[in-house]
Image 1 (cartoon, one colour):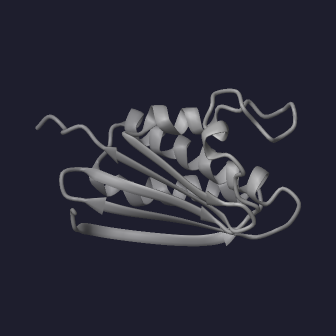
Image 2 (image 1 turned 90 degrees about the horizontal axis):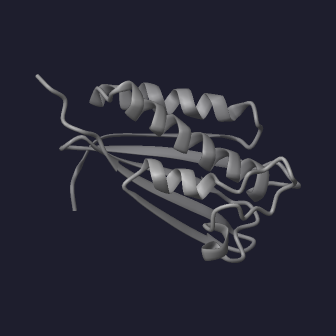
Length: 145
């Protein structure tokens, strides 16, 4: 297992206004790897998707906390984790299908698909009534000298 060269974690209430905070916090932290603008955009997008899922689905009917953590590794790799203690996902495989949503008709059902597309690896662990942990791994391209 690779050893992390730097890490951070932030915990905040499941209010929709905190999604932008999570995006910016992760973006600022990951900047030390000198990602391209596209890579940084992808990272911020997957953070938004995972945090929004926790707010909308995990804590649909109550307030709770979301923890976002990032570990940076040698070789320009990073691991993002978004954890909630909300209601959990009854069927993770079904939830990962494009267009599936438990939300209202304003939800696209594309959150996990977007996360999977913009990262190298996506793992979703969930237990009903106990919460969800979404883990994403991405390796940034080597920058030209």
